[in-house]
Structure formats: C-alpha cells, structure tokens
Length: 487
Image (tube, rainbow, N blue to C red; front, top):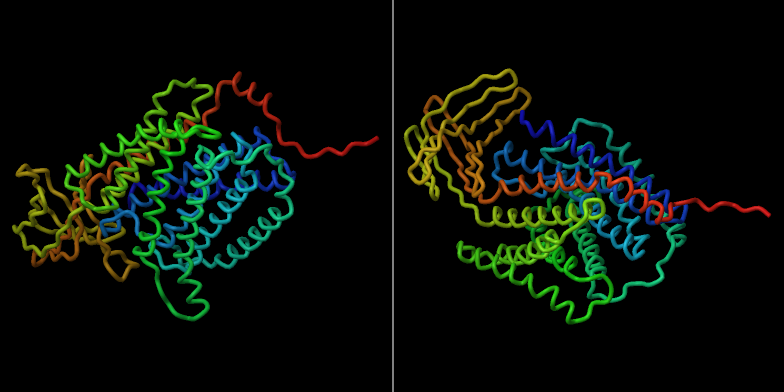
C-alpha cells in the first residue's frame, strides 16, 4: 500500500497506450508517401504527450522501489524496468529527429522508423510484464496472455518492416542534405545514433538471457555491471551533446562561431568541477558527470534567458526547461549512486549505530496487526549532530500469500540527503534488531526535477494563440493523399 501505486500505473499505461497514436500517424504518412510540416507538428504533439507520461512513470516507479522494496536504491536494471526504458529511449530520439525534420526536412524516414520502433517496444514491454518469462518484482506471472501479445508483436513488426521497405522512398526528399558535421543538425544526428546505441545495449542485456535459455536450456543473468559499463559512457555523451547541440547554430558553422558558442560554457563545467572537488568528490565518473552537467546547464540557462513570445516560443521554452530538469536528474543520479554511505549493525534495545552525522538508537520493537498483513515494527530514535529528529519506523511485513517476509524501509528525505533505514531482522520478544542504514545525497532532486519535467511537457502541449496557430497552419502544407485526375 503506497500512494505512488495510485499514480505510477496510470502514468505508465498512458505512456504505453499513448504510443499507439503516433504509430498510426507514422504508418499513415508512409502509406500516403507524404510528411508535410503541419502533419509533422501533429505527430510531434502526439508523441510528446505519451513521452511525458512515460518519463514521469519511469521515475515514479523508481521512487516506489526506493520507498517500498527496502534495498536502498531506485534503479536495478530489472527486465521490467528496462521494458519501460526502451520505448522512452526511442521516443526521445524520435522527438529530436522530428525537430530536425521539421526545421531542415532531413531524416523523414528515420523519424518515422523511430516512431514505429517505439510502438513495437511498448508491445515488447507489455509482453515482458504480462508473460511471466522474466523474473521481476514488477511482473504478473499468473497471466496466460503472453502468447497472444507475442503474436500481435510479430504481426506489428512484419507490418512495420513492410510499410517501411515499400513506402519510405516515396517521402519528399530535402533540397539539401547535411551541410556540415559541426552544426546543430550534425549534433542532432550524433544524438540520435547514441540513443539507438543505448537502446540496443539495454535490449541486448535484457533479452539475451532469455534467448540463451530458449536455445541452450542454460539459465543465466545479465546484471548491473554490464548495464553500468555500457550505459554510463553513452549517458555522459548524451549529457554533453545536450549542451553542444543547442549552443551551435543551424547550418554550416565557421570555426570562430564554434569557439564563441562552446568556450563560455566551459566556465560552467569548471565551476561544477571545483564545487565537487571542494566537496571531497574523487570518483571519476561523478566528476565527469558534474563537468558535462555544468557545461549543459550553462547553455540551457543561456537559452532560457533569451526573450521569447509565449505564442511562438512556448514550445522552445518548455524544451529547455525539460533539458534543465534532465541535467539535474542525471547529476543527482551520479551523486546519489557514488557518494552514499551505509552501515549495518545488530542492535539490542538501547544500543546505537553511528553513521556520519547521524546517531541511530534502537528503542524497541512491536508487533502490529493490519487486515492485509502482520508487521514487526522497529522504533529507531534519530539524532543528527546531536539534535533529535524524531523516531523512524522501518518494519518487517508478513503477507498471507507470501512465504517470506518483506522489509519495508522508512525514509527521511531532505534537499541535501536522505536517511534510509531498512530491517534485516527484528525480534520483539528478545528486542533485537538487524539494521541497515544508508545516507544517500540528492535523491530528492530526482523527484523534484521530474515534477518540473512533467509540468514543462504539459506546457509544451498547450495550444498557442489561435491567430498564431491559424497563420502557421495556413503557411504549412497539410498531409494529403494523392488525388487522381481525369481528362
């Protein structure tokens, strides 16, 4: 029972099911052989809506795991976690590709391919969740609908490949191709390639154990080391490109222009590095993340400071707010993943555990009976720098249909850091407690930045002023099917 379970599943559902609409629009564009500017804006809008829901849902799922599962983290590269992450990656790539298509007429077929792939990955994700072939705390293993979903995935895949093979060459081609690699459109292209590489990496690590088991009958698993080794460098490159791309102008970029655009943000990178080093950070990946985040934050704030008209610049403003939120999320993930501290102890009543600035004293344990579970609740008095902060109550819960008890942590969140207490074992008769305590910095920044991202996504979807919208529609050719002529 957690409040996030009232929010996470509907958001995830909207993200998955919502991808049906851009899939239909992309298929229609291919069948008709036309992708005009007005139609492309419609496609982007209907892609941005489920993307926003999916983004929020993924982080809410991590928040739920952090608050409920008791292992002290929010992302474990679980197969079902990956199932929601895969379509998010391709949808994000499609949104950036569509921007390049709208601005320069480039990558029309590539944009539609990404949209079709996003829909297929949502079906694959549904199969992962409902079929029971993956072991996960998020999967529903009692369902027998897996073969049906797999058959539908096969049909959708065949249709997508066929319509791309037969119709993609009918799309209008741009008058000019990519003018220069060092340009905003060049960075968009590299950005897309990295997103695809990221998608392939996660997909391979997720389905490879299943393929091996099906072909050789050998059970194996691909754990966090593989995903972190592959994902962290790609993620850092994407974070850096989030700053480089918007800093460069469209079209051919002269060397002097590139220097004027890219040198000032190095001040943000240097400031972030100095701040981390002064705080005692020595982890190489964390320092690299801080430098790239500082660079991208400088560019993002500079773009946000430029005056815009609400009717015409609203979408651009929202996009850079989303960029800023992503920068904060990635920096917070890096800091919380590498700079946390933890301690374990077996305590009797009255004994204490010291962890950094905190002193944790076990004051007792009680059994608690609820209609759906029986719990053993530990009471831990918390002091920070000698000042009392109250009592935290992690617990061990026993459910009628579960053979093993489930630990439920208690989390005290703050802007600077979280104090996370979970129970390893507890005995109310002997008044003993096995306590696992963790201090994780900046976790709350992930949740707060996600809220900003969600609001910015909704703002980007708000309709512009009617006059501006009507003038844009008049200037942009609509998608039309070819009409037969008679003589």
